[in-house]
Amino acid sequence: MKLRWIHWTPRVAVAGILAATVALVPTSGVRTFDTELVKIDYASDIDHPKNIVWVLAMGSDARRGELITRTRADAIQLIGVNLETGTGVVIGTPATRGFPSRDTAPTGSTPRSTSGTAADGQDGGELYGIDIDYALITGFSGFERMIQAIGGVTVDSALAFSDDNLPGRYKVGKNYVNGTRALNFGRMRHFLPAGDFDRSANQGRLVKAIFSKVKAKQDVPGFFEAGMLAAVTELRTNLSPAELYRVGQLVRNVKPGKIRTCVLSGSIGTVGEASVVLPNVTAARALGEDVRDDAKLDGPC
Image (tube, rainbow, N blue to C red; front, side):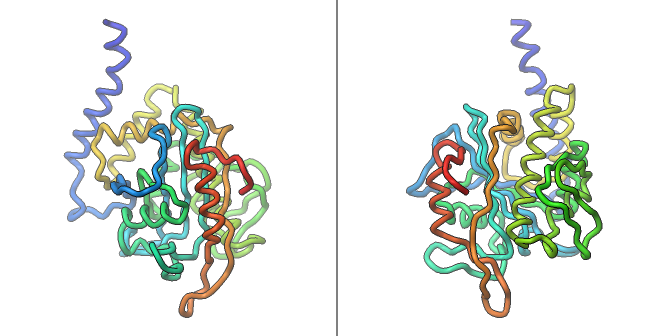
């Protein structure tokens, strides 16, 4: 009985502290949050096993004074985790583009978040034919703080590149990046050979780097708990403290070596006067069929 008590005490303690922290954090009417995590509650004809969790992660292009949930996103990554096998998949949807609506062609010049995080989570899931469990959206400063909270990450770059519009230079291979350098790694596109498609691939590499860092440090005393407590003060969410803690635990189930990244194909077109990336909907549905039941990409990207 004593060993059982010791085993569960940290989880109970962290959940209790999270609850207390949530109670103390000002409401959104007092404070503007730069990160939002919501649970998606909707039913469809296409379901997935309970051991698979799907998260649509979006990076907002909101500038000072703009709401992250009401501006375009320039990073869209569909993340699937298999809790039993540790397998994972990260599928990038290149911006700038709009999600296809339920029965029409792509709408808008960018993923807009004009309907809110939950609606974008539903739209993103429908593109691939997958029910999204959680939708996460963050702005520039929110992303930087998340990376800083875990001590930076090491991202593996397939290209050497820089961008006149943003500071930083990256080499082929491993690059250690702090919050600011990680943000710029995921934003640069002007001198990448495939533009938005290469940028989306880099964003997927950042997601994998985050998984790897958390996995490597998960047994360091206090690392996971400190990260959760830091996150909750920056996060607006409809999750209870206990569920928020369980979502955080998902990262600990992933085996980074079993994560495959992929970028959805598409073409360049126009909507109104805006140049956009139009997704290959057929390819998106094929990817969804491949990964839906096991979060494992067996076929080609």
